[in-house]
Amino acid sequence: MNKNIWVYLEQTDGVLKSVGIELLGQARILADGLNQKVGAVIIGSNVKALAQDAFEYGADIVYYTEAAELDQYNTDGYTTAFCNAIKAHPPIAILIGASPNGRDLGPRIAGRMETGLCADCTELGIDEATNLIAWTRPAMGGNIMATILCPKHFPQMGTVRPNVFKKPERQSGRTGELVEIALGTADIRTKILEIIARGDSGVNIEDAEIIVAGGRGMQNETNFKLIEELAAVLGGTVGVSRAVVEAGWKPVQHQVGQTGKTVAPKIYFAFGISGAIQHLAGMTSADKIIAVNKDPDAPIFKVADYSVVADAMEFIPAFISSIKTQKA
Image (cartoon, rainbow, N blue to C red; front, side):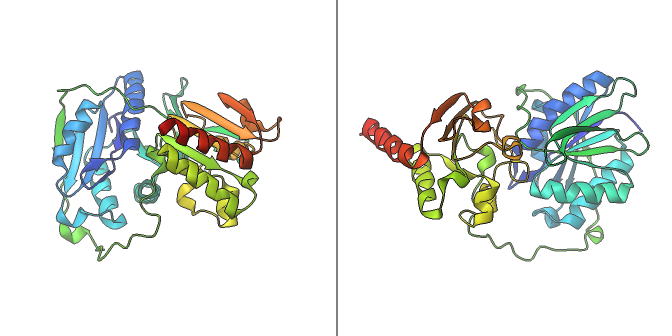
């Protein structure tokens, strides 16, 4: 077994997901600390060309598996392909983005390789005493941070939440080693027959530059439409707290927080959101946070760059009117 650090580079329709690129930057830091290399794993159909992107974002070695049957993600085929790579070139650790597919793939790989997996990490480091990867994640409802080591089973594995790390700088022209991992079609026991998109499947708040988020303080679904109107005026995306999803005002694809998505927009508006630690866990990486709440002691104000003590139902219509006037 070598001590290389691997990153799973998830792709859709030939485009790498942002979280994989973010993790290449962290893998580079970890690998440099251990004097080792960074490996990237890419699986799909016609994905070999994506290796150059991986090299330019920091990978030293790219392991790829191509097959027409892997055009769409399927648990069986992707798990087998990944485990084939591990068996042929065993790494010491694997970082996987905590996307829906990553959360499915990571535990399957860990199960087959008989190792552990630390889920939903928000920090990574090296334990000085053991040179093991130190995986840090929220625990006890987000009230404490737990750092976990895996000293007895390898590879060490963890899923890492999107948007907790910045993308590394791209180094144009950088190259590396390319390794193909074979996969026989007999190894794929399942086949995707059809993909049916659900109503809000196009929502991608993780990559949004402007998020207008509303919470329980919006009081009812009718008032919440003000959030949607403001988002439309600003060219932003709607975000919500868990309470809004539970109330049925918006689907879970819009949820920000520990049990939702982790986001890092340029601007995050928080209306009627008190600032529970579970919600803060998903949005404090925003460049600018603007909070509006009629409670002057709301915890959200402790992380906000700009705080407004006001009733959101009065503030938002005036804000929308002002924006429209300036655009006219």
